[in-house]
Amino acid sequence: MTDGGNDGGFDAAYIVEAQDSQLNVVLFQSKYSRKLDTDSNFPANTIEKAVNTIKCVFDPSTRIELNVQSRKKVEEIRSFILDGAIPYVTFVMLNNGLSWNQDGQNHIDNAFAGQGQVRFEHFSHVDIMRYINREQVINTQFSLSGKAVQENFNYKRVILGRISVVEVYKLMEEFGDSLLEKNICRYLGKNVVNDGIAETLLDADKCQNFFFFNNGETMICKKFSFNALQEQNWIVKTDDLQIKTADKHVKRYIKP
Image 1: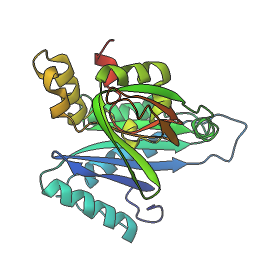
Image 2: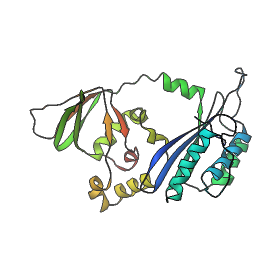
Image 3: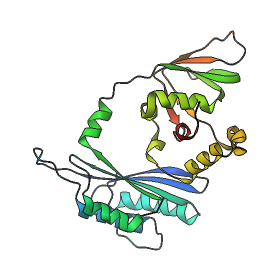
Image 4: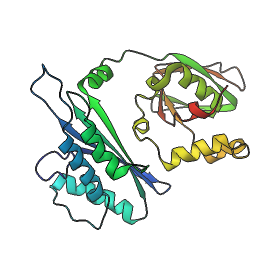
């Protein structure tokens, strides 16, 4: 949280550790309207300020007056950039009204049209309530290919195994973004890692090595079960399944 005087034009920042020369950063700016009986757009001048914030924060050569909290985050971001990381920025604009108008969109387009490193997202009170009140609990099953390992430690159980991309596709086809509620990466948008995944899946030669080219995914659940008397090809039944880390672009490119 960085809100306050000289916050640099963002109220909060979330930094994902740089991997493969890529740095994912999510910035947040919020506005509140006291006139709840009318709809109000996110102020265009705030969008313009956000555009300038991105240009300043992610260019280490620029100078910007910052409070202690903001300075700490900006210095961290710039340290990654100076080490060669390429930043990908999602700026989330939150308010209890409508998204920005065309004037605000013009500020974004004039600065970043055709630029794959920057994305703006709007999040309203309706989205917040929908997120808080979401009720879908995903109880389902999926198949593992070949042999897998099951371990118990710290009063938890873990299975390490191979899952077909087609299995992931089927899960995404059935449950969609509900599977990704606990996956921060769902907000990171287009980036070089996602582009690399798509390229691997679409290339007839590279797709044979998809298992080796990607780090896989982590699924979490409240409970799982399987036939431990079966040597391989387990069918894993889960309660309250979530994909913690992975990429939903798999759904776009693979068809069962």
